[in-house]
Amino acid sequence: MGEHTAPTFPQEIIDEYAALGVDLPALFSAGHLGERMGVRVLEASAERVVGTMPVEGNTQPYGLLHGGASAVLAETLGSVGSMLHGGPAKVAVGVDLNCTHHRGVRSGLVTGVATPVHRGRSTATYEISITDEHDKRVCTARLTCLLRDAPAPQAG
Image (cartoon, rainbow, N blue to C red; front, side, top):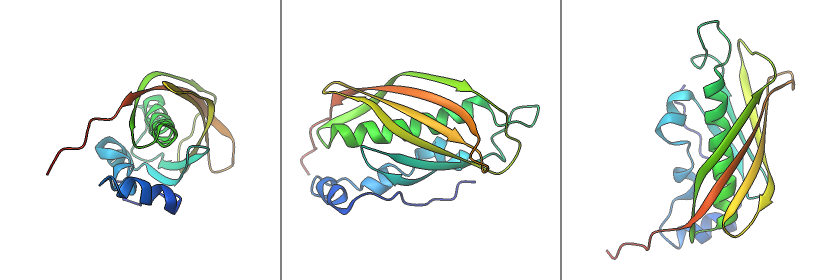
């Protein structure tokens, strides 16, 4: 866990954010919580975000993947998609997350795929499907983010 892999973004998106002084792959490396949980963002665009997380180290007392760990993976992926939809002038802030857990997983890697349900001016909603290594659905989540105006860049 804690392994860092830079997410994959289209070059034009990286360039757009870089012009504003933002290192987009570093920004979406999953953050401190995601790093502790081993979350890796592998692919990212406003249309689709893909990431993985190991089951090991993210279990509840019965040895199954913790539902809260699935929620962290879901919110991470949905937030990345929401921010990419909003663009550099917006910051995505999660306001509603729901998760339905379909089956338990005891080992391996789970993969989350976030796709948009709604992309508006002030909110974005993504559905996140989390599957195990056998492509069996483990969790279905939905995240809605508020798109707030980004703070003005600091003069330096």
